[in-house]
Image 1: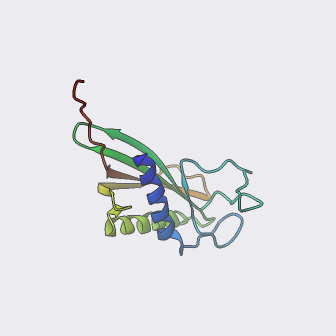
Image 2: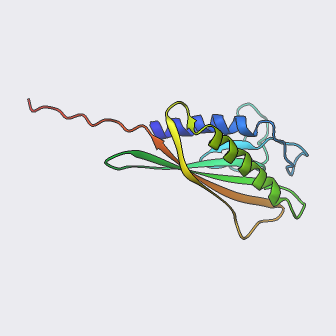
Length: 155
C-alpha cells in the first residue's frame, strides 16, 4: 500500500500548501483550492459533510503511476491544477498555485518521513485553455520504500 500512503501524505501536504490561498470560483469570490486524489467528484455528487457538492474550480488533482525495478521503487504523481477567472490573465492564478506547490516541495523534499521527491519537476500550461477555466499540470517523481525480497530455504 506504499503508493497509496504516498498519495495520502501528499494530499495532506498539498492541503497545507494551498489552505491560505483563496481564488475566484464560479460560485463565490473566494475559495480555497480543493485537493483531490484520483479524479474530481462527478457533477452533482454530494459530500458527506455538505448538502451540495463543491464547485470544481479551483482544484489540485493528484494522480498516481508507480513501478519497481531491481534497484528501487518509484512513483510519478501528476498534479492537474485548475483555476477559474474571467480575466484574460487568469492563467496567472494557475501558475501561482503551481509555484506555491513547487516552492513547498523543493523546501521539504521528504513527505511522510519516507517518500523523497526526485528532480526534475515539470510544470506546464496547456496550449488550449477552456476560458474562463485555466488548466496546468505538474509532474513529480518520488522514490518510495521497496519491500525486501524474502528467499525461503527449501524445506
